[in-house]
Image (tube, rainbow, N blue to C red; front, side, top):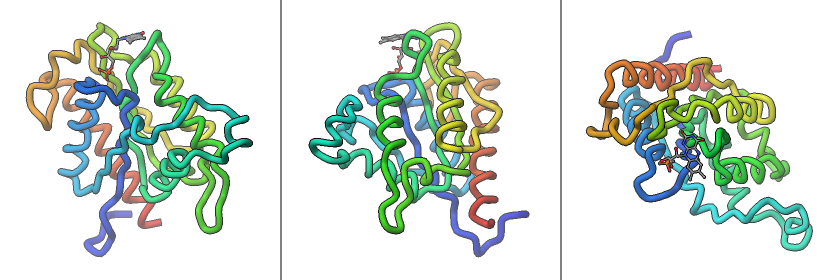
Length: 203
Ligand SMILES: Cc1cc2nc3c(=O)[nH]c(=O)nc-3n(C[C@H](O)[C@H](O)[C@H](O)COP(=O)(O)O)c2cc1C
């Protein structure tokens, strides 16, 4: 099916697994966001730190109920058609910030018309990327993120992914990577996510 002029713009949620000032993954996500917007998508970025989620603790739910940030992430996911996700690699794993947020979202229950945390994501496309100052570009953590999103959240994770090595030298302009080859890979990944999101909207 092709896009029609009457179909609405696909909405993508952009998440970085690092919220630190000057994050390389935040910069990579910003480049991906610019590319998605150039293709007609609406993109909203969520700051995982601003969700203020405590370390996951089932006793805390029993004592105080679900933290507002967990519902907020579910609401955001429910309101978007797909995901752009930049994940740093910490000791070959995704960051605690990202895993903790996903764990919290996974236990949010259905509430009225609102889906549970995993229902909010089901069937939606996700594009994975990573940036590292190291030589491997952070790609060792991406299979774990891929499994998490596809297995637990039933997301359609794009087969292509982008790892940006020596990332401290890649962000000299806001809308492209310095390396032509990596920039093309990123463009292709973003285009796949936007295309899948469009198909999903058109049903
Ligand atoms: C606890 C810790 C573990 C790290 N482990 C890895 C690693 O396994 N592989 C890697 O490429 N970089 C590793 N790094 C370096 C990160 O890639 C680097 O700090 C990067 O800038 C983090 O992403 P950000 O810039 O988006 O915050 C690690 C950094 C920290 C703080």
